[in-house]
Image (tube, rainbow, N blue to C red; front, side, top):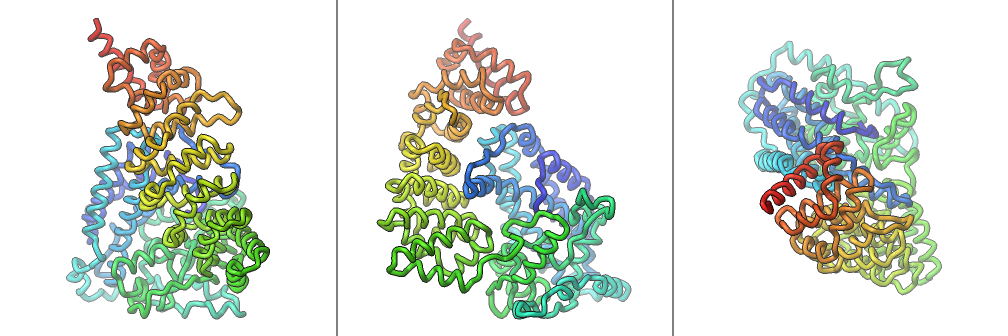
Length: 619
């Protein structure tokens, strides 16, 4: 459900419910059993995350806050994937081939691929070092991810040939009548609410009452009612006395994902889907509309602004937090935005500045505006303005690119426009504000794994290290966030070490100013600790005394990170083990092994065991 935060404890309940779903019968018996088994492999991972004290740091600016929240996209993907898995398993175990069309079977098969892809994506972006996941749990996660990847290859282009025999049998009359009865119960919410003015131009053609529509109805209503009612309803505290639950109108749910749509688009057959899911359906080689099974005349995806507005109004009316990308009113008139984009290329410096100011303001307000600005062709022009000799133009241009990059689909457009080189140039020679926003932009773009490689090879890391060492307080934080994300990719760790990132990070460990960045420094060092060159640099920078000092007196999560880094530095070095013993690490490690979380106890106990063995050998 959009807008509902899900805690690790709640997610463990979801996994437990998935484990209880019987997968012993039905056409999708093997798919259900395989998916349930892979989900159960994630139990210990979620338990360790539950016990982890790591929390996201709130940034000062709106844009930065949005970017930092993107760092938890992997958790959102995991939550959505597991919740979708529960709904899908409940539906697939009840699926009767004789009562459903081949399109319905194919769509369930596609949903298995969507859930598999979502879970694999989440696990691929999991920041192990941030939560200090144990080696045993990492092995479980990697096993699950490997199985999910193999499943993706097996699903391939979603061929439903294995269902052809069962589906070729005639449908029983009773079953056919039941399907018809359920179809007649489907509410026609969207058609009774669409305005009759100019917005009619965007209205989808009337829905065909095909048997494929009934699958969405079965999935959202009839497949294990008790579980699915919880998944598709949100109880409002103020209205709980009036109604036990609130059902999302079926037309607001994507027929593929069965989730409230945040970016509805219309395909050539007139049906509406969530953009990301229908795009993946098409990318998998499917040439027919999932709902009607009509052949797609083209693959254009037209935004359904009318439905988006209706969903927004419905969310506002029922006091429900709206899916990401919505605002109360759909802002930004396309003709106005196109006029602003044209002004970006004018010879008048003042006109360019004015247009940049308005685009910056619009792009900050909502994802709707970020979509429209990108569709108007602004990104390539903004990238060119990053190298402007006019300081104000450059500052505003990089801020616009930053705001636009928050919307996921715009990241690829920005990369295709060759923005990284220009952003790095701003990072090296721009004003203080321009450097800060350039660093934040690199962080935003680096959220896509493939971009980590490109950005790392562009020369951005030395410039970020320089900002980390010499920038403003906000600049240092932006640089630290970008460096952390880039260093998740193994190839960038060596680049960061060669750029001299370790020395300023170690200095931050002993800083006493009001703007301490101990948490950020420890987080980056924990990511680097697995790299041999980074270990050598940490020892050369005399990091051990600083880490032990933090182990003794700092906040719990910093003590745990300090213990993790000490373990990485000392586990194969007897001299360093003796050194940390002499520097007073034993007592705080014993306290941590007794009073810390599970992950803290493991690290502390491992270090204590190494210290015990080293002392026995000396005796």
